[in-house]
Image (cartoon, rainbow, N blue to C red):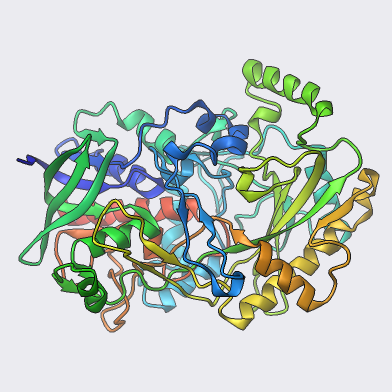
Length: 538
């Protein structure tokens, strides 16, 4: 017999959006808010030590460990898609880069039917979330829960990258989150006093003491409970026990761009033919669920160094790491406070339409297989991704079994423009890495390799080596009523149902120009105000 409990709101997923949303709703002491997380508490110390990022991909217990369907344009490779499965979600395992995207990205959302999500409408919510170490101005604010700061440590290699970018003709920018984004510089990070400031730390560390906020971990949602066109609650499993918990006001699905559409489809909400093919009773035919999947594909131009440099794996690196541990333990500074992706920038491909459409992340180390495999020696790499891909994919169910991973098919490089932009990006990355600032390291290009020069060679390299840079969005996109593929309206309510909203990166109509963590938190901040306006008018 399933246990039944009542709350005012049930938030499914304690990731970037869900943690922020639950914390904001629980500000009203009259509301009982339940926050359900499939993963465990964020107790792994490597989550909180920024440099621990280098090892987090090896901890399967805090990661969904997804892999995509074979990608036709990537030699039929199935790509590894790590997603956070712990309090804070992917904000507990990401590289902490604080990037909002371009102002035009949000005006584009508005043009696609996301009414009220233009730049001037979302900027107040970015600022509401932010506690900016550099102070407040027209673009930034202080006093919010999410700490944003400059890095306490950057490697000499990262400094050389910025110098090389300037030598290649790109401006040095101190802040990528303003109206000017074309250039190179150091990333600001979501850190507080040298430690990771995940959404869990930002929003739940204080809120968890509220008597009206009930945080439940290790509880995986099987399906939503739907009756007469209304979401009544959720069915989830915790420690082998099936629970039925009810939401008297709303269920808020914040499980992310993979799991939110999966849960909807498991609940009978989605493309009717697909659901029927899996033996699922169709409660609401909503064809856009799981469609519109977008992600940033990433290729790394990597160089090996003949001299000691950066964060290498070799006997000569031991003294540096020993010193780094000591500095971090004593002052929360030094190498341990590094997010590793310390520097980067935004530049334009030949397809750019007025704003940068390529992003760089510079890594002062050699990276292989998302850090799951060690590479001996010293070196560095420049990640490049195309920010506005035209390829579109899908999330589908493999079966009606909630324990089975969904089928993720991002359909990378299916549009020719995506291939051209990535080629441009690789060539620009090579141009920066060839500048005199790096000559002191006596580098040798490892990938793609100096002998790879033609477009055909470089496209083959991209097909063989490109991976995700962890930004899937769009699978429950918002839009107006005349958009048949819109899953939610601009108030984030699921079309055709009551008592149910989706609040996470899946509602983005299109990818923003950068890392997606800060925008996901912004979505939750705005959603919280939408919910409050409806349920506590005046």
